[in-house]
Amino acid sequence: MFVAKDERIAAYGFGEGHPFGLDRHAVFHNELARAGLDANIEFAAARTATREELLAFHTPRYLDFVADTCSGEGMFLDGGDTPAFPGLYEASADIAGTTLALVDLVMGGRARRAFTPIGGLHHAGRDHAAGFCVFNDCGIAAEILRSKYGLKRIAYVDIDAHHGDGMYYAFESDPDLLIADIHEDGRALYPGTGRAGETGTGSAEGTKLNIPLRPRMGDEKFLQVWEDVEAFVASGEPEFILLQCGADSIAGDPIAHLEFTPAAHAHAARRLCALADKHCDGRILGMGGGGYDRDNLASGWTAVVTEFVRAC
Image 1: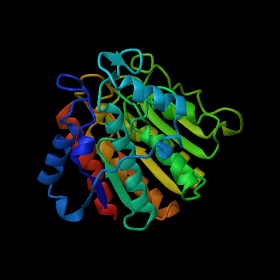
Image 2 (image 1 turned 180 degrees about the horizontal axis):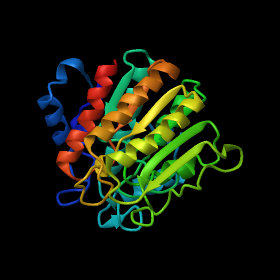
Image 3 (image 1 turned 180 degrees about the vertical axis):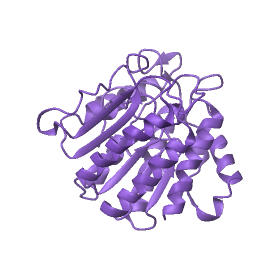
Image 4 (image 1 turned 90 degrees about the vertical axis):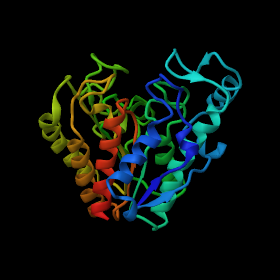
C-alpha cells in the first residue's frame, strides 16, 4: 500500500485564507500518523508529469495557456476560482505526475492499492481550468492506463460533494470509461451539472451514472444509493478503479452540505476494494479531491486509507 507524501504536492494550493490552502497535505499526514497506519504504508515521492503525459488528456493550446498565464500574477485561469501565479504550472504538473507514479506502482505489481491526498482535480476539462483544478490528474491517469498499459475498461467513482464535470464531459461519449458520481444536486452547488439524466451519449449511453442528492441527506441516503453504484461498477467488470473521495461531502464542510460522515468514505473504499479484488487484480487508486474543513479531510481520507490497508 503506497501513499503519496511529498512537499512538492503540498505546494499545490492557493494561499492562506483560500479554501484550497497549503496545509491540507500536512493535516492529512498528521492524522494518518496519529492513527498508527505508518507501519502498514510505504510512502511515495512526487514526480513531475511530462508535457507528453499531460497531453494524454489536455490540449496543447491549454498547456501553453497555463504556462503563459502563470508567468505573471493577478490573473485567473478561469472565471475567477483558480488564480494564476508563478510556480502553479509546475505544482500542477507535480500533482499529475504523482498520481501517475502511483499508477505505475500499482500496475508494476508493487502494490494493489495506492492513495494521493492532493489529487483528484476533477473539474479541469481538456481545454480549461475550473474549480481550483488546473490539470485533471484523474483523466490523465485514465488515459495513461489505456495508452501505456493497454487497459480498456476503467471505472471512475466520485463521492466528492461537487459533480466531477471535468471527467464527465471529457468522457461523455466514451463507452469504456465507466463513471459513477454521487454529488450534491447542482441546483444547490457548483458546478450545476450532473443530472440523473446525464448517462452518456452515443455509444456510451448507459455507461455513466450520476446521482445528485439534496442537501443534508447524510449516511443513510448514501448507503442506499451506494448499492446502485456498486451494482453499476460490478456490471462493467473494470480492469482498474479510480476513486475520487472528496471530503467536502462530510458534515461541517464550509462549502457543501451533504452531511455524510467518514463512515461513508470507509464504506465506499471497503466495497470498492472488494470489487477490485474480483475484477481488477485488486487495483485501485484513491485521490483526495475536495474538502475544506481540515478535520473532515483528515478523518475522511484516513478512513479510506484504513480500508485500503485492511484489504491489502
